Amino acid sequence: MSETPEYVPPTVWTWNKDNGGQFASINRPISGPTHEKPLPVGQHPLQLYSLATPNGVKVTVMLEELLARGHKGAEYDAWLIRIGDGDQFGSGFVGANPNSKIPALVDRSGPTPVRVFESGAILLYLAEKFGEFVPTDFSERAEVLSWLFWQMGSAPYLGGGFGHFYAYAPSKMEYPIDRFAMETKRQLDVLDKRLAEHRYIAGDDYSIADIAIWPWYGGLAKGRLYGAAEFLAVDEYKHVQRWASEIDARPAVQRGRMVNRTFGEPSEQLHERHDAGDFKTRTQDKLAGAE
Image (cartoon, rainbow, N blue to C red):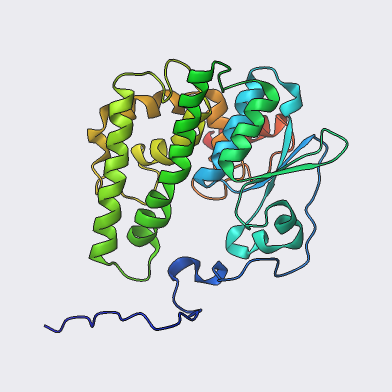
């Protein structure tokens, strides 16, 4: 049985357009727009440009939670950015996020539009704008922000690391899958031990830490990411499972999961959201389909 030759990195790396797996067509080593395309603008103060990946779900859940608490200023238009089609490289989107990643938010409630990119930054911006889901007490705030930034630093090992090599790479490779599976399970253990002592991630109160972490690690616990629930034995993290189920049952979370969703059950998809009534229409369609 012949062994695969060891890869020897070249002296200078060059881009191989054909070597990138499922997302090869949208990956490139340079930034900036590839085409001219202005962003649409709806009627509400907050304009979201996104897709229902875990990072996108963070923001739609946050907005729906704010609306559930009565903040009418949190009304928003959610425009679909199809990353597989390269929408994130349009000139308008690059103007909102020079990093060409979803989600991007533009706040038009003031005299000058404010762009906010990176999902953690958007959560913090909205929390501070509306005074919700982040404590004012100095030590409690520090705990929430520590876990928020834990998610931002940890999830790339889950998504770009484990998820990529387990689900999307052109071929299965033992070393990276083993390496990132180990790290993913370590992260789940961190959360499980924390949640053994606290109802929510940062303590007794639901916060932007939960909203940030749940779409990734709650989604993993619920078997929604990468088809890897059995491989990672996620059922053994009982406290993560309890927390994931509790958040999963929140009506605002259920609505937030639907927005900009283009995959899964059609009844759970709401490609764009421009009014709260859009959910009622989707619910009516779901009920009609069940008759």
